[in-house]
Length: 600
Image (cartoon, rainbow, N blue to C red; front, top):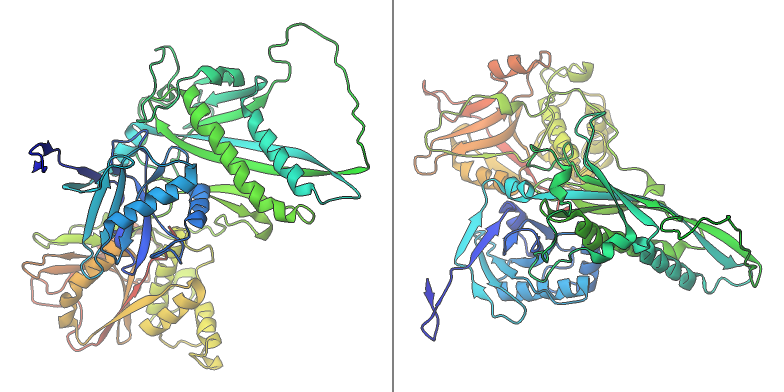
């Protein structure tokens, strides 16, 4: 406990982090991270995720621009709970930036606790301060907990709601005067948002289907039912409500997944229906009314596709979730689309479509809106290649070591794949293809993994090779791989030179830091040999280490058991029990360490 000036004692301040440390410290360059949490539904001072600020936001970000960017990404139910400065000693300044950007986001100062942090570039050490309310002095964090199973905390007591809504809005524009079109469009959007609580609007709420044809629980709420639901209080709890009110947990099976991936993102589905005859006092004959336009006008149909996600507690009343999360979320998305469309009202209308992602390293989803006139970004390349073959391998045999591994999925490219006979010369090409597949599977890129010839064409185009190189069987190495990654993906790489195989264990600590902060596959090249490195197991005290090698020299069929049993993917000790080294003593090695893009 810590004594204050008056002699009283203050409770230790606990900060709980669900995001990995590398999301705060990588890349190790001056930058700013916004911290996300859910003060309404998670324990106080809990950080669920970190988003990197815009490129020019390292020290003095444009807060209004940052707020607008975050508004589009943030799933309702999550909130700004802090900020971290990388390469600065001003944790308190980061906290105040977080308060300021949140005020621009919601129009009011945060009443919940806020976090500020700073990262020392040389060591990666992080210092945190917290303030438990607006105007409350920031204090040093006395205890930091990095959750071992963050998904459980997020999804055992939390869940998602999803609402999709297609709108076709009529915009009438006088033929002889388009000067007021923007004002008319803004008024149309605002009136559409205000009608989401009308009595004739109904909300069909259904539980997720885990298997085709499976029955699920469902209810219908009407717009005027939402005026009397419990509202969120300032501390995030609900007011007292009747036990008969349906909570979100009613819509889920007793056992459900406690992690969120692209494959298992189950959510309560909410469909908006219009019932114009709802609550009619008496039967009446349908009537048509005619309102003549004061001047000649043309009709512009504004087509909108809304699609939002919201996060809430499973114990929260579903009516309150619709009222406090779904409807404001739809209104927010309408506002974002309004700004994107207004500049092109008199030309071709943008075709806006929201998409939801769970980026690598993030436990929570984010939303982004694409103009699909410029092409869909959905993954088009299907592959039958083996993925993540290292998951089946036995232990390394390093006593007391700490394992640092690749972060994410990859495909195993090796000799003779795709009918290309590259036996004896294509191992570095195959390692590059495996690395490229990692960027694709992590959704950092949508381009196809290049063939040997396409790799050669890139090297010719940038002037590294002569035209005769295309179609040849010439080897490539770490430098060529870095050129191709830079050209095709805009990825920067770090190259480490090692004079002999005996010196590779000396690089274990640096490699461990790479896997902890970047998580990308590494290429090891020596002479005419190239391998893909997926991780290291390193005992810093004893110096004992092992390298997790994915060997592209395999020439057999994609048989996982054969690959693992044959040692084509497995741990290679620096010196084995018979004194033999996997890496040759008289060979010069290059290590190519690709960097993770700064997507979030």
